Amino acid sequence: MRTNSTHFCLIATISALMVINQPAQALKLNFSYDTEVTTEEKVAAELAGSIWEQYLTDNATINIHLKKGGASQLPSGILAGAIPAFMSNVSYSNFYTALKSDRTIDNNIFTYTNDELAVANLETPSLWSSISAEMEGLTNKSFNTLNLTRANAKALNLLDTNSNDLDGVIVFSNLMNTGFSWQNDYLSSGVGTNKFDFTSVLIHEIGHILGFVSGIDAVNNSNYSNATERLKYITSFDLFRKSSLTSDREVNMAYGGTGSSTPFFSIDGGDTAIANLSTGENEGLTSSFFWNNYQPDGYQGSHWKRSSNGFALGIMDPSLPTNTRRGVTNLDLQALDVIGYNRAASTFNPLSSLQLSTLKNQAQTTANTKGNSTSVTNINKMLKQNRWGGGSTTTSLNQGQDLTDYLAQEGLFQVNSGTMWDSYDEEPQQVPESSAVVGLLSLGLFGLRSRKQKTHQNLHN
Image (cartoon, rainbow, N blue to C red):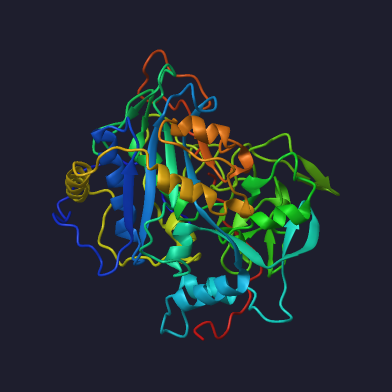
């Protein structure tokens, strides 16, 4: 299923609704703001949260802390990053039971929802069931636990849906002395050369916190050859990470991948490749298994695969040029749908500037009520809880410390930290050009491949 790219202009339409009707149940994105985050930046964050709320109806509150860091404090070239709070060591059986209970049922026996199809193609937990991961051609690596972001766990009612604990932190650069700047207004007539659309970036980072993450981003030089260790990082989204080399009940956890080993998103056991996925940030980690070359593409696996022609499938694409604005697509929502989120039957039109204006006005009102503070207690609690794979911090943030410096000291800027870093990798333009595509944000290629279709029965049971 091919979806259109959302490099969109915000043009008012006659049919646009003046009032946004929230579903009876709706996800709530609750932001807190660190020092130095401006009101304008708060409005962008509240709007980004509101846009996700139009699409998802899970009755849960997701708490996110937003921090602005100096460009010189962050790793070189970093634009922004999401640090989801993880619920580690969730038994596969418990996840499967929650996902099956959460699915939406289509009463037509000839058609199936994404939920039904996804659950039907997962291994049913039993004394004899076995799920395994393929790693660089090595198969039969069995696992029985998963990592879920806290937000994903809330959507499945595996955590208190109204818990006040932090579910994630987003850190963004002030871009000082980089030659780039932020465009904070999502409703502006354009973004501008050498400017990144701040709201687009925040929508993307929220997607990671909601659960668009892959355990291959925990792979590094020290654990690359340790299959047992790598199995600890598998996420709920990885259950739908397949390749031509994986069997029906096997997931692709290879680092890198080209040709037949290219990973893709699939909800029918790998019969249909809906979209290719990125294969790893560390291009120095490579392996060859007979004729299959496992070459990383330079982007974290928690993204759609980057397109060579600039065509983007969704907000979880690994690249965003300057002078570009994006939004959530059906593909992004399909990915969240099958890991436990409920989609709204919404009349929200992301191309309607009237509807977006309504959301922006609401965002402005909310932003004006929010103060600024470093939520030391909440941040410490989040980082001391089990992180990706079960790791925890050894020290504590104190009121006098800068959060960005603290995160660096705690190793949160490392590839295996569970942090989704997004970076720019080109120089700013010195002379503005109307068609400039510069300064990539490392935040995909749409690869629809079909394999022999199976017959699925009793999906409504």
